[in-house]
Image (cartoon, rainbow, N blue to C red; front, side, top):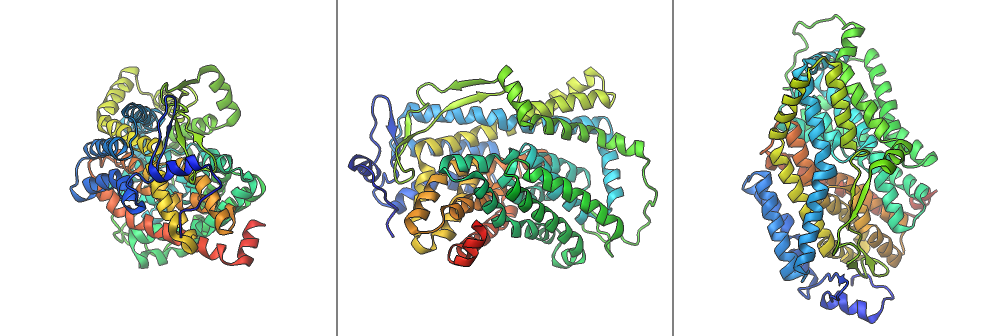
Length: 570
């Protein structure tokens, strides 16, 4: 099958076939500079390949691997795709700035918060209280990584759930590499509705599809995975036998979350899907554990401690409050900062929108990626007061004072956090620079168009386009913005539902979140495993790819089964 075509002008068709044409005020992307789609796709994928080989193959430190990938991306963009050097530089700086703010600005205050609770002795107390809910590490993993993580994904997204849950799992005795990998694996199904539904809202914006219908289709597509992922998580952690031993609890968690997600998405919209599903699932799960207990108790090392003496006393309410207080403050602040009215109010007081001169609306995406030539905006939003990271920092400072820490102690912890996260800052900035060169140069579109050549099996490979988009950019929102129009257009050309293919992009994208280099670095930093990103990536990659393929299989079944298509769309 040929790459999908549209009724575009001869000029833009020539641009696509022969490469970009620059003008004094604009630069048009070209998606086949090598004049063969396979070779062009190889060049487009080369920066990611270099990054993966450096991390996984040579086990190079993440910040060095990211810098190497950035250098390769710059060369490919300027030498192969003929991107003007100043545009490549500007897009790199723009991406690095976005990496520092808001991405790193979420990681840093979360680690700061964790260090404060350790300093005050509250983290050990939290560990004891969580053991009071359940002593079994498998159930703790479900409660924290899957359910609690979904709440933070819904409230803020952008790496917050992985950072918070990774630190808690580490405190419960999980090995750092496992804590990082499992936190990433658990943070899948909720991603589509993260940050108050931002990915869905962005997808509806670029496709022009009805938001409520699109929300329902995405939720229907992901509901089976809401049930599957908890089973998958425990199987990956403890093995099949240990997973079967607690299947009733896993089923309760998955079915409660999935059904609530579907109901809220269908009757309300994308905004409160994750938060509502997480809160209801948490209540149901904790109540269920009061009437059901596993036959065996496994500790974080997966050792059977059923017959070891354990404390049967419950913590007094004031002890539980002391342990939960800093995290309750964090939850409250994140929830407040995620409230649209509050965000809009403080945005109006503090937000600066800074167009990147020389890049903003200079680069144009062209057919067949978009129906008509479309300028890429390059505006740096410095919402320093309304950013999620600011809310977390405020929570950390309030919690520090409430825990009785003195200003001098808080300042020392702050300085220690700066030192401990310095390489993470470099890594995230470099990775986002790679992502922005990929976006503004059109490397992402070149890879996406390669998948679009698959014809009748496009529903499967179109899902992998979404997976690739999130894996390369670190954001389901970015993946939806980059490929939403391509999915809609290709679906229309093939005579299949654009709603299903747009949903497939988001559904495939959530499975790519766990292998996004930015996510891996956040997880490694939160669990004190920085430098082990290659090992974490090896652990999660097969899970990510297989789950994405399963989403692709389900999308293919939906597309080619008229009765199921009608059921999902209505």
